[in-house]
Amino acid sequence: MAATKRYQRSDEPIWWSLFSAGGVCVAMLIPALIVLLVFGPWLGLLSAEALSYQRMSALLYHPLGVLFIGAVIILPLFHAMHRIHHGLHDLQWAHSSLAKWLCYGSAVLLSLLALGLWLLGVFV
Image 1 (cartoon, rainbow, N blue to C red):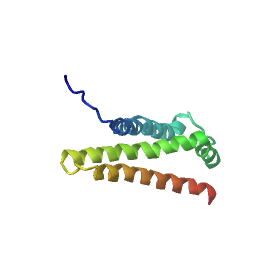
Image 2: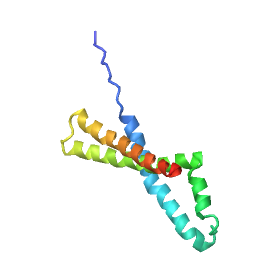
Image 3: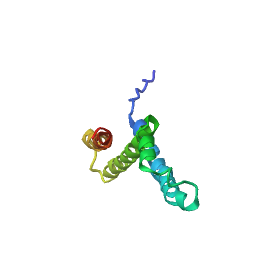
Image 4: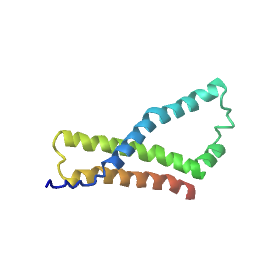
């Protein structure tokens, strides 16, 4: 009788999905925003009133704006840390779970720090 093989669950799909989402954010979303905000007023697509401080502040501190800014900050951080983790793994410097905790833990801490500092601007 053949012994059944027990599979161990992996957390890699979570990290790969954050890596992928961060790559899409960096490659597609951020350049589109830059082009829209830089060339939009020049081409007449956006008025100067639409880019006023009051309107942009209201937009960025709206709950959907907070989610958007959070994605723009958090996803590229996880993308970068996943690249660093697998680069260390390829160099055979990351065989233990310590490297995983350091890479992804620093992404979480930097994300919380960046979002905390950004949200503190609301209350100052």
